[in-house]
Image (tube, rainbow, N blue to C red; front, side, top):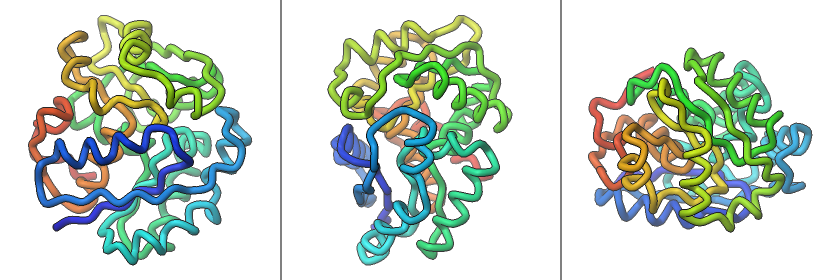
Length: 243
């Protein structure tokens, strides 16, 4: 049994994780601990506070006691708002506190884009435009070109968590570009795990979503390889990229 640990902010789309665990169909357990988000706002100052070290540290002990072998900060915006260097420092501090390999969803997107061979991507963000632009800048800092960015202007994770299949497809459709090798949906508050094969069939390219890449990143940290077509093209490519 491989136990993977996730620090998930608040309550929005956490039910993606038991769904993903089921689709993995292997001896893998996903352990989720909810962190205190403070103010629920897709605003730079609130997002910086959401990913503050003391907020993340509070959940680490629970994951350690559960036997987690790696931990991922499952909040894209709470990582990339710190910039590339700041997000690296955030992950280093988390690894030191947890005493195990650590990463974040922001870095998961960069690694996953490389894994599926997408050097140029389209960003379909629920965020306001200024926050979506910061994510695009983070991707570029990681060597991923951005064909275009569409921001839906949603201010709270709570509202994003109410979105269903129609809204997810509409968001991806608004962002897609002919020269994009993949479409990225970077919000862990967005339910996407049930829609991955249908999304990729609709758009004819890899679709990378926040909770999907977060779990894949945890598997990468533990050097596990799982073939799970129900989780999209990302989970059918081997070996998993080593960075």
